[in-house]
Length: 228
Length: 259
Image (tube, rainbow over all chains, first blue to last red; front, top):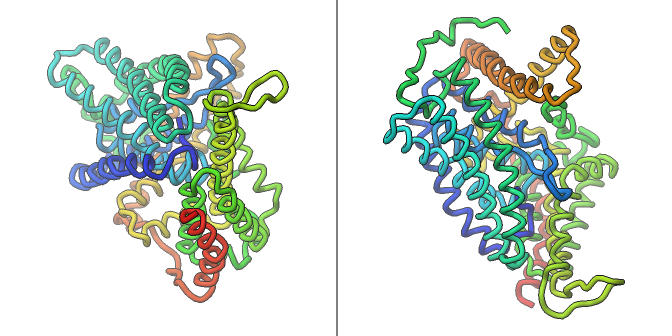
């Protein structure tokens, strides 16, 4: 889903960069006011984890390969706006370190994976948690759906941007893009649910969006000196 | 677990002759210059071949000046470039308009042009990024971005992510040793479930260690600003570097936009 340099016309790249920059700027302001000390390592580590997870490619049907996105997982762990910052950081580092995703298409990539993926999934889940009395299973199921949806919406946005740029006609790029990502999304949902279930079971205090029933345990994390 | 890709960081360090003129330039000049080249290639009208050609000449000059061996550039570009070219290669098969027959298949002329332009711009972008990382350490890139007015909260998160990549890598090493010591050899699909639990354990252990790293940083006086070396300055070498790149790329870009 990483768009390289040259695939987008300057107009499309700029039009995608404006909302992406706005969302990241809002996320950064949010981070400055809300980020308590304990969450600094979590933000950095989640970003590092997503960075590493995105480098694992797995084969999808037809000789193509996909990778995990991590947007929904990030959103549940960090909340939608910090997750947006984390995804933007991951994508920026990938563009600068590995040329994975073009620097000139960074705005579009942040929009597709960070804003639509993380903010979309995060706000949706946060709303669901506030409105519905969710149990653990229902919450995990919703998180899985959010993970699948984040992948599909990101793929849809990518296809639309490529179509608008005249690189490939939209009618040609859309069906394979969506069908491949429908499969990738299932893998993403399985991984998200598994990881989230394990984190909720062991360290629910690390999860920003969680069902009301699961109150945070009071774990003196900073001084417990867990053996590792 | 394949090192979770963290070993790939070995491919992202500096290369070439560390004392070369390019390596010693202020990182800001390199970020601006190489980003400028990528930008020029990306905004060039499709079909204006002279622009990506000029960009490639400029990049070859930078690589030669920094003594980055072609093998290193090739090894690093190989990680992403084939995938990109493969993705672009579908375009000639699906484009409309007049077509040419190459053997049994018909390729759209318009599609071939688009493919060429997209592939050229993507190649320039990839090589620019490869040369930037080959001549500049990542923390220096971050410092340059910060001095170019990228918000500090953003570069700081980047810096923490970079630091924690190594924490994760080391944790993977320890877990691998523990797995080997217990004779873990996944042979069936059941191994996949174990790997899933390993990934979660890695996250939790990495977080616990990341917290200790952060506390140790705070204990040593960290207060939200990464320690910086001597501040670089934009002197004659930087001006010359940017002027040389600009002389190669700007005139042809302007000409291509006008024509």
